[in-house]
Structure formats: structure tokens, C-alpha cells
Image (cartoon, rainbow, N blue to C red; front, side, top):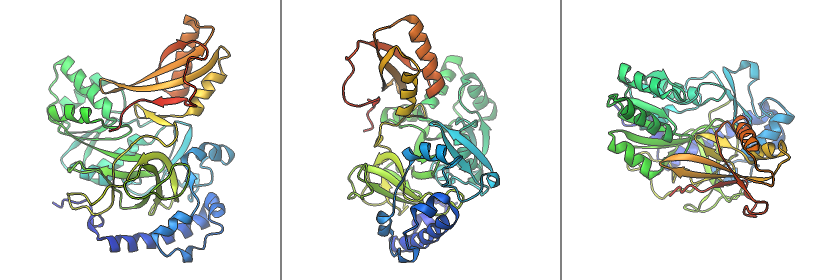
Length: 412
């Protein structure tokens, strides 16, 4: 049994760069010829003149934050797709709302590499606690488990009693889902007096894995590693057993740029993650600005994987952030405000309490009432798809710092 998912993970730097340059040129030509968006964005780019990976810095960015408007103007995918919608395997609607495709190739999001690095192997039964409905996360990790030969129990979100019962009944050995939901399941097992000791491995994503969380899980006998990906890009980077940074996926090129620009920063400097996909011909995203922050680490992974590493997720370049695995966008908050004349200003404060995300909704109003509180709770749950604690504030009392979403969690 090899220690690596495939031979790509141990290439020397020169070989990787040459391989990726060849794929990049092929992808640029493909995107330019088959995607309406890139036909326009790359109209002035001579693909034959791209001689090195550093030439990427001269190409235009396509930002995730621009997708909302692009998809409204040119539904369903803003013209970024190179495969007709009817020829795809599945289509999804992620929070925002942003449309996401899935093509027909096996492990389309390339998450199998992260699953393998997490120790998932044939013989494991995986509890998949990502949602299978509307959004693609459940299918992303379902196909990852299939890629490494695992059986899957499609648990989805919620129903913790049923999740615990499934772990016991099937002897489930691995969990995939958000970092905080694993604690909910384990605590429920304690409450029920259930034996879930078969659970030994976990691959988490969709939110930060705080050090205190990892320590708690390891104390319960579960080795936890994380990966970073998006519904648009699939896998971007993944943690290994060394737990020293996150190794970049072999089928993407990752840049770190100064937020608000396309200019690369020096290794070690924190900036925005920009990703170019090399092998996805259905949705060939070029220099896709994720809005997520990280930094390149020195050296390579102690496991022998030779690709560059990043420090992991270090917050957002914009105010868009993840709460309980769901993106929350300032535009969603604004829609709630506009629908309620009594509200002058609204601000979401995201904190971490007992290793769980808490969203407090601070509301400036001169007309505070139980009725308004109930209406806002319903509006927030409908628009943002999360429950928030409503707290009223006096007019003019919230900070005048331009923040609509104030993420107060520490990512150190």
C-alpha cells in the first residue's frame, strides 16, 4: 500500500512546473474557445506566449464575489462553464445564491486526494454529514470516499440520534463533515450512553478546525485532519498526517495575492488565495479569486509530498464568511434590512462558544419589540439559512467601521 494517492504528489519542482505549464496552456485555449466569459476575458491573451507559471499574474482575475451579478446577468453560470448545462451530471445552488455545476468524471471535485491523506481506505465506512440537497458538499465527499474505496452512510446534517445509531449499527470508522458537527454527534452519544468507539478518523471542512477542537477529538480517540475547498473549485489544499500546513492539490495552481489586487505577494505574506484549475474542462476557472486568506509556508511536507504548502484558512479578504459551514454574505444582511423599515442598521457578530459558531445579530432600531424580534429571527433564518440571536441596540451605538459581518473568531 502506497503512502501517496498518486505519483503526482512526489514530483520534483521542475517536473511539476513543466507538467502544470503544459496543462495551463491547454486549459487557457480550451476556456477561451468554449466559455463565453473567458472568450471575452482572455480575448487579448496569446496562449502561445505563456512561457511560465509566473505569466499567470498578467492574466485577469475572476472573483467569486462577482459571480452573483454575472450569474444574474447570464444564467445559470455567468458564462464561465465550457459544458452545456444540460450535459452536466448535476447542478446546485449554493448560498449567495451561486449556481455550481458537477460534470460526469469520477471524483469531479478531486476530493479523493484529501480523503487518502486523511487515512481513509478500502474497509472504512464513512459517515458523510455534509448536505446532499441543493448544495454540492455531500456529493463532493461522497465521490471522494468512492475514489479511495470506502462505503458511505449518507447522514447529511442534523438528526443526531440517527447519526449515533448509524455509527453503532454499522461500526462506522470515519466521519466527514464540518468540524463543529462532529462534537454535536459525540456529545449526543455520551447523552445516549452509546458506544461510538468505532469512529477513529475524520476529514473536516466547511469551517475552521480550531486547535482546541482537534485536541478534544484526539482525546476521544479520533484523528482529525482538514481540507480546504470550495463548491466552485473543488479541492484546493489538504492536511496530511504531519498536520503541518496544507498541501496544495496537484491539479490546481495556487497564487497568494495582495487583497484587492492581482499582484502576488512574497512567500510567507498573508494574502488572498487565487486558484487556476488545470484539469476541469467543464468549469475551467482561471485565476479565480476565492476571497479566502492564507500564506505560503517554507519547505515541503514531512510526509514526502513535494508541492507547496499553505498555512490553511486565515479568514476572508472581504466580509463574506462561513458560519457553521455556510457562507454568509453582506448582501444577504442588506436584504433583511431593506425588508424591515424599523431597522436602521444591522451587524452580524460571529463568535466561537464551546467550539461552536454563534451568530449574534445586532440591530439598531428605535422600535424594538417582541414582534420585531420574532420577525427578524424568521427573516434571518429564511435569508441566511442560519439561526441568529437578535440583540437590539440604540441608534448610533454600533461601530462606524463599515463592517456588516464582524468575524471575531481567532484563526491562530
